[in-house]
Length: 107
Image 1 (cartoon, rainbow, N blue to C red):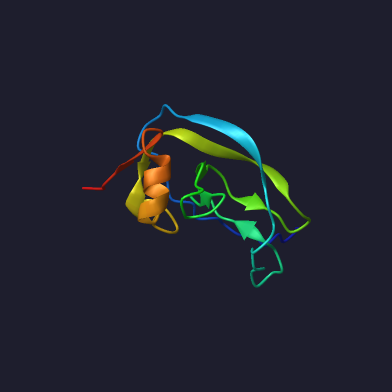
Image 2 (image 1 turned 90 degrees about the horizontal axis):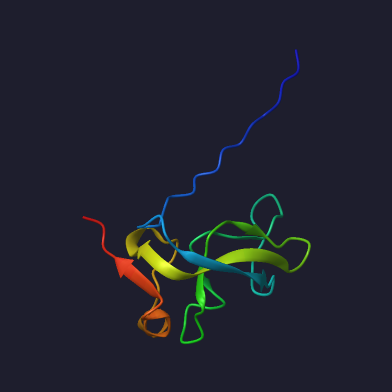
């Protein structure tokens, strides 16, 4: 019998609707710190490219940038549950995303 240690990933669903628009962007590895296993992971739900007035969208999946920049799906239009994002967007990012991404509060 072969023993394989499995690890599970917990990725909360932050989408508030089934309809959204996403495009592929190159996700940078700069400023990403390695985890305990030495992997550089940009988590799903991260405001991209930065949580400020330059915000374009929100990452749909975890992106492993350990080996350098990687392509990733960035949601540019749709509804999001703001409380389930890994980092709450700042006011400048919400303003930059206004009209494209709408934030819904969880009740």
